[in-house]
Length: 407
Ligand SMILES: C[S@@+](CC[C@H](N)C(=O)[O-])C[C@H]1O[C@@H](n2cnc3c(N)ncnc32)[C@H](O)[C@@H]1O
Image (cartoon, rainbow, N blue to C red; front, side, top):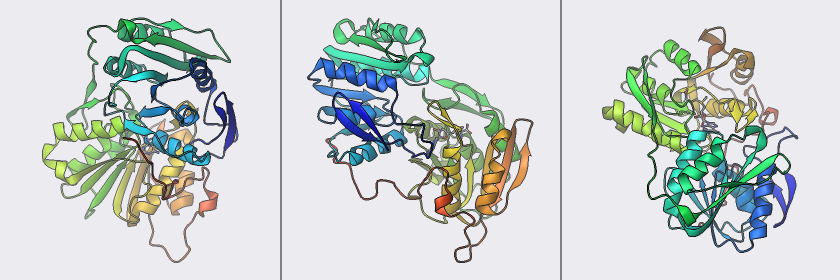
């Protein structure tokens, strides 16, 4: 946990998932710049905060009537955790990116997302959430800045102005006075996936816009049917290609599609509905932080192409958390199939966790690895929880605390 001084007061903030890397914190200069700007405006009225990765902005302005609109389950948890750290009552509304917030807002704050298509998608929906006097302010870091950002705001909202640079961050301003009468529709990415013989579509913030990930393709090539397995999980499912393959190959198994992105889970659901509608009753679609709060020892197989970064931070901490969660959720003799960049050396971690790891495929760049959960004798777990590199817990980090949402 670290302290951030804001014009709204001193805050105690943490990233979620927690990391042991002391250089990482829950905010950047763009968050601070946005908070300074909001504070100068005084009374904010009804506020919509969009894409607040670790809930820093939402937590700082907790005294306002605030709604957080986000694609991320991790952000949803981060806000709850950070409100808890500061002992703030959980008075805010969370709306997933796949739904439209209710009513119109006086102030809209956007932390500009990594994906330009998602930024454009958000902006295209804003006219429905703005009135003539709504103030819009967007913040981003100069190292990621592109002129397409202010241009997108001007195209979608009618006009835009930019701030000067402050601590390597900049802001874009607009308001609801010149909203265009019509919006150009968003084009959904779609492509054919030959190993599946299906067309896959994905919403704007889903991983791999317009292409099948190379790692996913290699894992699909190696996949074999799982005899007598009742429950399979596609962990970090994205648009659901791995789970679709598992559905096809295992006509009796139930497949659960899990991702922390609301758009990913919805895309996976729409892809099953479009390509294998008869299989829908064998599927579950869950927006979740990995396998946290999933039943222990249920799944006979888990397929995973883990992320190697969270936002702009590269690292294997999310993958490590997923491996630990997978081990807990697998039944005895259950198999974890995981694909990753060869240089990440995931086999070392899987070996340590499961006591076995086989390379079942790969190429120069990627490896497909398989570990089998061995029946445990008492206390025979190869890794003790304290050895976790990221402190990822197996249960919800926010325990029994529940949001007292205004929704
Ligand atoms: C490398 S992509 C793989 C997507 C897809 N399975 C494929 O193979 O193309 C990793 C996925 O993991 C998801 N993810 C990241 N962190 C997660 C977490 N803590 N819990 C669940 N999903 C997560 C991301 O949203 C992303 O969709």
